Length: 298
Image (cartoon, rainbow, N blue to C red; front, side, top):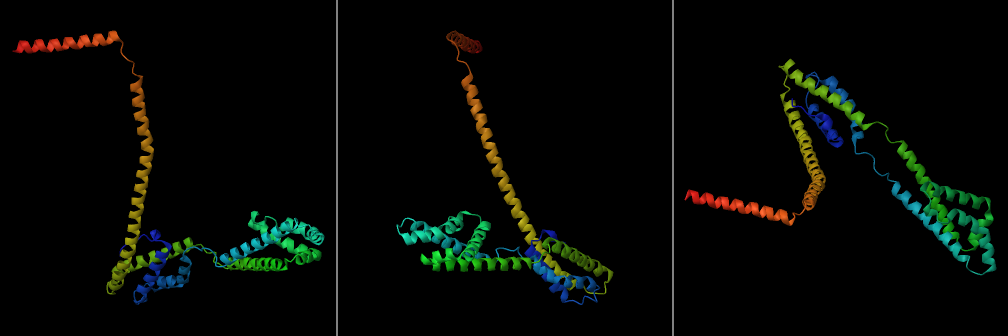
């Protein structure tokens, strides 16, 4: 039988691989082929394969919880801003109502959105407890015409807390089993099963393992190809990233070397007039020597 690095398969690939192995082997008489005991262990562990799904993402209730939280903040801000606006009105009745309701709305509702999420609904809970214990505050808010806003705020707050509890209970029911441990266990039993098939085809030559082995080899080849392609792509990406990093680190060095060469050239001292005349004289002597050499040859 062909070999495959089971640990290199992704979770969803591994899940499909195990399902296909079970499908292929199920078509044979496992008892006659002496692999039934190991195969039955794999069958018994089959339900755990479903736990190899993609890790949990956002909870289905989270979107509704976020909406209700925003609704609470909007109505809290609406009540608080309206109460602040009423303070500018010069009316004895309104001023008295503001004096009763204002301190509570200011303390609990003003700039509520600037607080942490853990504090927001604690503040709202305390606000409604105070309204229950001091009914005159609620009566003042109602008298000012904000009963509808207050009811909407309270209903959204209650619904928010209810969904929070439902989400906590739902998450608690999620499996605590480690998917990696499940995959390692399944890998162990698969290897054992493959080793038995590979060995028993020689130990029991009178039995025909070939059709099952051929089908398993095709399956292994297909999944090995996935592993190899992924490895090649990862290697290509790593090489490309390495070249980019080397280019980035090498460029400043080259620039620094060029700057150093230019600086060194600039630092070379200029020759004096006497030195220039001496060089010119030396050059003239060389020219004369070359001319004399040519005359001798001719």
